[in-house]
Amino acid sequence: MSGPSHRRFDLNLGEEAVSPSPDNIWRPSFISPTGPLTVGDSVMKNNMTAAVVARNLVTPKDNRLLSRRSDELAVKESLALSVQCAISVSNMAQCLFARTR
Image (cartoon, rainbow, N blue to C red; front, side, top):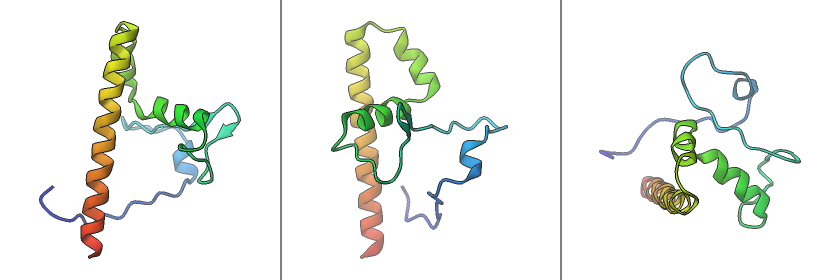
């Protein structure tokens, strides 16, 4: 990143998050067998929540690519993807932390 971003993201779930998008933007849906995930759900404390979040972090194209792999290769590539996601989140957190200093 070249510098801090002045973009503000609205993380509130509104009606637009539920309605289908006419454009070509992927919007993951975090629906579990018991209903939609809420801010009170924890990935750290609930395996089902962790599985729902992990499953929906993969884009539809990545999902198709992984479905053609052997189980062992799919697990390895999913793990690599998880590491990449964790690094991205860590980098974002560091940037946000640096901005607040």
